Image 1 (cartoon, rainbow, N blue to C red):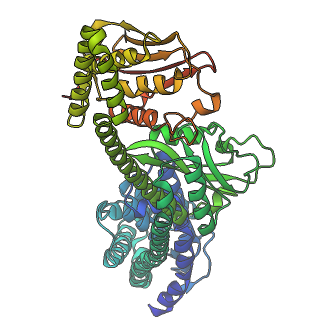
Image 2: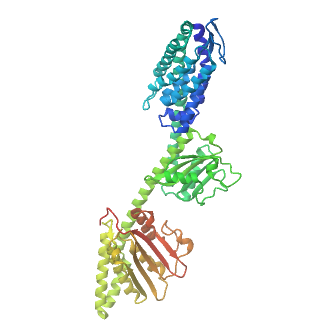
Image 3: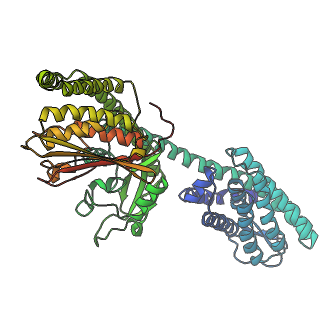
Length: 581
């Protein structure tokens, strides 16, 4: 028995090599992680494990039942020859990791090959290879990790069943019985140990990679901590560039890039000369990530780079999500797909999730800041001394000459301040109430300007039931007066237009003032602007509240020509569900 057992153990060294190689394949990692394989991956698994079985056959030791002599490598067998081999290890591994289908598939490949070599046990061994796949599939547990004793048991059991099949099928029976007596126990022991050894090696390799993954997780946390101060300002070109530079300095890749849902915000590393910031997204893989919200590994052709000498051969593209909505992508570029390791995939997946959480925190902090600013602006409007004193002075001058007009002005002032006071405690109001507040404000301003200001109202009455955030229209009208028509000598016109458009309401505030510089229009409403004319905080505040309460489709649209006036408009739903004043 030991004459055969020791040589078989020596040849199990091949198992070590195969086990190490198989851990390099993605389909096998999916099997280890108990994930469902797609059809190409299943075929690849069957083919690989079947090849593993064939290698186990070729590396077996031939035994001649007539001469009772052992040979070396098995290539072709005579009628009196059989093989003591480790074929069953590959088949058992296929069934244990992949279940019945992969086990039987690998068994068919290895079994047909064994049958083709001939020998009086060729048919019996071919059948037993398939049966080994069935037995291993029975012990497959999708939701439980494999144990060494299970692999040891199944490997030995599969060989025992093979010996039984040889006795029942091979002929003559006397030769079959002599063969089983000679090779039965060594093969049962060797292949049981071999199956356990195969699993042990895979475990050790994967444990090392798990340690490497843990290191990458720590690196992701460190990077997230380093970038949080930048992403608190939101996803902008400046913050994206800083974040990409920090990641690039720490991660060994060719380039790092970030996009929003429309254009490239930053690109650091190789190919920066033609992967330009501000360009619209052209990569179909990036658009797929934005649409589906799932990480994608893009090959050279999928990158869609038009530059003939682009050094970037592959990319891992992960979504950046804010409140489950994809707002951008994070890209790791490498020279080829061979550099895309599981460790790198885990790093970018973890990092993109952490960056997404930072964006959510940034949005929450910005919303709190806007809420505080809105409350402060409302409180300031309640006690604005200049507005109050100017209004009172106008009323004083009108009391004797035009008492009825003074009375109307006093009523308008009362309505205006009452609305401001109520705005600090309400989240929603009707468009009708918001319009009354604006009319009260404009009545006071018209009186102050003494026939210099003319206001036109173009209103669909059925649109006034729509709900809107308090103090949304008044800052827009105030902006017209302070910045649009303040320098005109006369014929100052403001038009407030509220029109129904299907299931939406479009609100426009139009003036015939001096207009806005084109370069200033691009930033108004999206950020604060430092200039002699003002910070743009009022428009920024209104725009962000519209976007936060009604969605991105409600963002302000600004049309202006220098010297020919300005039109600021936005749309809101005609019926906003689930809101109350």
